[in-house]
Length: 217
Image 1 (cartoon, rainbow, N blue to C red):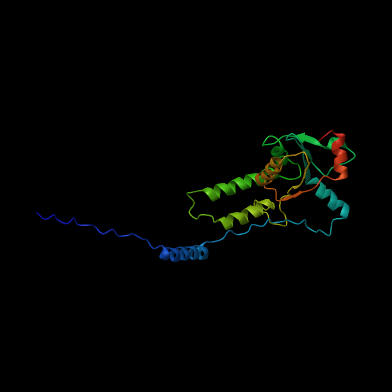
Image 2 (image 1 turned 60 degrees about the vertical axis):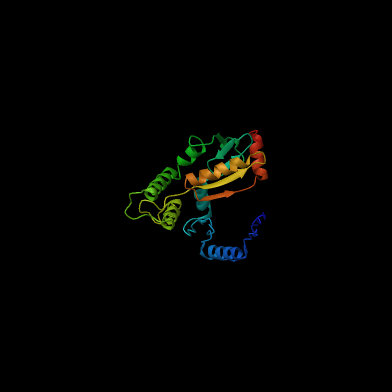
């Protein structure tokens, strides 16, 4: 009896051609590059002091000194302040304070020559208005930034640039023994207290003598 021939299945090699996929990826990359909005560079707004010709140089210096606070960042997370420009002949002008709302923030809020508390209140009201989900017209981010810039200049309660509230000028001087976290924290306090005029400066010889007289390291 003749044997039946077994049928042999022909094996086919499956090959996926990914060449069109490369073209598709290039099209997607090009699409996202053209349609994506790039991050806008943010520049800090600087507020220059008014040049009042009616004031003498001595009067202008006194006015600036009243609204200037010097902050020293020292070792062991300690922070010291001078409520006006440092009097290098008077070591008692340097005062120690603490971090947080009951420390440096309270000092800035209750400064006698700059109503920082009113600026912080205006900032909170603006933030609540911006976050209000029931608002008929939603405030845009651009409008929010414009209003925040006015608050930092002291233009609140119908005030204009001509009669704006006085604002503080903070001089931040970190010692070599201070921590990087101290610098980040004090900059956060500037934002919380709506202080737009501040500078990070180095410790000079007079500062060092003043701090040495108080045994501040």
